[in-house]
Image (tube, rainbow, N blue to C red; front, side, top):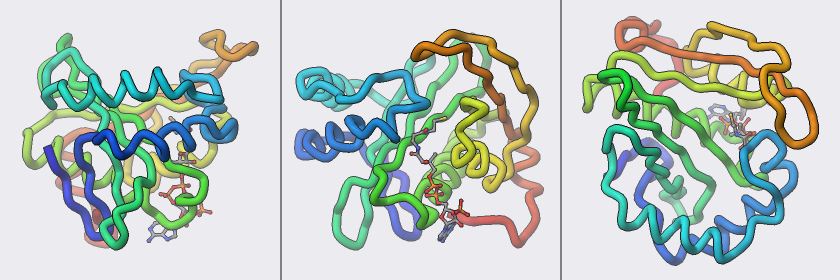
Length: 187
Ligand SMILES: CC(C)(COP(=O)(O)OP(=O)(O)OC[C@H]1O[C@@H](n2cnc3c(N)ncnc32)[C@H](O)[C@@H]1OP(=O)(O)O)[C@@H](O)C(=O)NCCC(=O)NCCS
């Protein structure tokens, strides 16, 4: 599975990604609103990459993690995850992470636009959703930048990392993707 955008390759993980993957997952700022703790253990990362290398993409009921590589120099910038749902037809959920030194350049926006194009245009998906911690302003901005609609604000709806956490739910439909204005961001 390969998604190409202007500046990025979204590709399968490789063994060579291990060091950089562990480094950005071990950054407390990157882990703050995510399901893992920093530092991220090397053996867990190795097992994760090994599983991703063996797992076929787009299998309903699984999450598939794509490595985000900068085309100019091959640097691993982060990753994008796609949950291919099996409880609903043609629906997916997405997630994304960018190393701190790669933030602020629109790379994550470009990657998410590439993933949305793949899901809506190549796979003919109907709806794509994403959730984020209500305090994760950069993530909420990104989801709004790519044209996703905030559909829900769940207040202190789950316990994570020692606090009651509130959550925004976003989504976009295939027809909304097709009808987005000509000036909207493109991958
Ligand atoms: C969420 C996350 C990916 C957002 O990173 P980001 O750098 O803000 O997102 P982008 O790469 O799309 O960059 C957008 C920023 O670059 C700027 N930018 C520069 N060039 C740009 C371009 N060509 N296109 C779009 N934006 C550009 C934008 O103005 C924006 O900056 P601003 O928010 O100060 O206005 C990042 O904060 C992250 O990985 N956080 C930790 C993991 C996490 O919480 N993930 C989300 C879980 S729900």
